[in-house]
Length: 214
Length: 306
Image 1: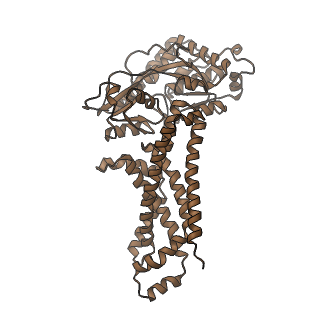
Image 2: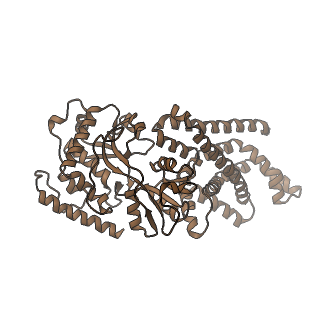
Image 3: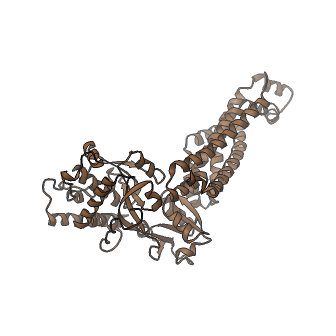
């Protein structure tokens, strides 16, 4: 275990980068995901089509492929951002497809009468989405969103493959010096498990507080 | 790429000539018209005497199994790379593995397990693989986990930059700059030691590192000299700075504490160094991009940890 404890500063730096990746890309993914869901349930056919195409595209491509394409492909056409920013944007766009699907199932879970009542009150589509449909849909899908958050946290490890020194890449580098893979990767694994456990705890609390009694 | 292939072909032809001149090996003569890299070499590779395969030893287990399980890479050019057309694994490390298999079993039967820097010690420790042949630099830290036969080859790290780049003449000049290195390569600790203020970005494979260098993700790329020479020959937009600044002795990783097997592999290394097979294997792989004659093989057991 000393191989792990002797290199705590390196692990700490990696953990900070991983937390940055998780926080920034989850925030981005929620924003994009809500927008895509709104498109998918909108009365405009073109928007529904765009939303469906988005979800199908990002759900059917592996994240690593997208990361490598963005990191090495985009500079070829003159778009170059730092590695961390590129990774955040790609992970956010990728996970947004999953968030959009979870949210859509939440929207579908809301009784038709809710939308009809909103329309009867004279709310526009945007207003009924904002005040009636989405607040209820979001409460329904807290647990799936928590799962997506955990999946996103684990997926950030792929950023290590494109030059971002996250927790996994930091563990790799320490192992290169110490040649003690088992304690080092158990240590890194525990850090990921802790992140996932926190996420599970928070979603559990949120679900209990925001549950809708029907 | 074309010139590389041509050189490989020239090397292969000269190899055929050499083995024809030698003409000592009977029984298992080279397959006529063989195009497989290394097959002519292997025809001349020695086989251990029955007395050397001690009863109850690792060698005997491998011989009974009928194949040598090697932990290695499939993507290291000139060292251990799978040919997408033939499916054969080619290169210096790969040929060494085949020759060792022939020495033990009598036939070059190798099962390759794709190892990674983070799994090699574990794979050897739990017996998943018999040997590791994967540019495995011998270090005292690693020698506490595994045993090393060899060194069987010695290489060094060097620096590549974009053509025309200035301000980098030695490793210390990398301080304060962004440097590209292969993930899980000895370049990372080496840069940290000589240029502690350098920011290191790592990518999984050599082509990715080259692309990153050309896209200015870093000002320099530190990698094994052999690989960089091959890269610079293919790609005129990069150039190599100076000569290697480290010396990395590569060992054959074995299970820790298996002294019998270690001595057996070391004896084999001495044998192939003496009979010229080592030099021919080098010529056939690394020698296709590095000019000149084969270097003098490193002294067995000459580095700490071996």
